[in-house]
Image (cartoon, rainbow, N blue to C red; front, top):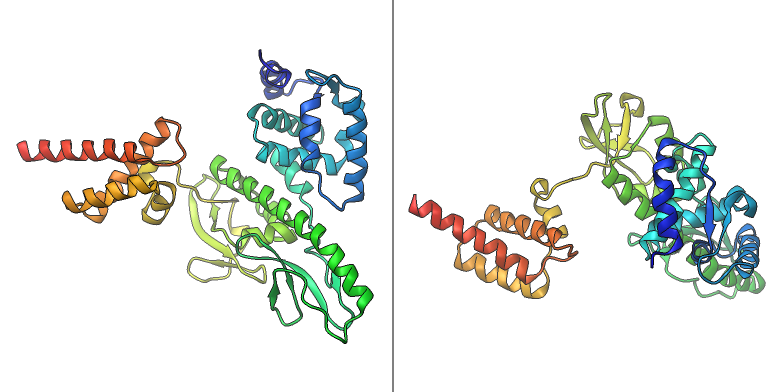
Length: 356
């Protein structure tokens, strides 16, 4: 039997595409899913949690829903941000789609796209404030490590994965308060970082483009998104969609092109994340990442490369075919069976060339 979320999404999706004024329903399952992603330590979020719990208590355990406008939740940025988390990270596809449709509904009412709405909901998580953790004579700010790990940074730029040990000169009361705050800030930043990384990955896959002014405001000008953007390669495009050049965001938020020249965003009609869309277009480093075989497949590939005397180009061709075969099977990982089939095609092609 199909769940209410799946039936609702199937019925309303065509109307949402046409911009029709379809009443939005919030199911109990979606409300409960949003509780998992409301940011800790946020007073507004705490109020939303209590409100959602009272709404869920009045609904049947299965199949219950409410009109969104009657809940008053669509005016809460804390709830909408939690919906964004659900749309990108929740394990059930139907619930993710329901959350995405709710975001499109709210965005349409505000004259925005879903992408624009989500960009305006991203919290700073304390990255925009100096001296969050005050020890008295010493102060530490919140930072983000290379693996999206929340860190504390001292005045000299040294990074700490946990609150530093107090010194005799530190204020005992302030130290205790800083240590009490750290777990909340750490969790909030880690959760937000994961969600925004997923958003940027999806933006790359979908080929989303930012107008220069929006990119400067929503990415470069945002404390968290600027930290994540520093780890990515961006590209400027002309009005016809042709790529002009790539560029990166430096630690001081300045922009430098691939030739180390200063970037003027106004030169571009749009800005986006360049993306390889097909296996055949994937080059060495990207290919070896997305088509990395499992241990059994890797052993087979190495043995076959020696036996068949595969060149680097031939090695990558086999990987591309194996990645495509895995995609056709719906597998996330390239397995031994995919490589065996790809190698058989390679051997057959070699035989045909020898016969000719």
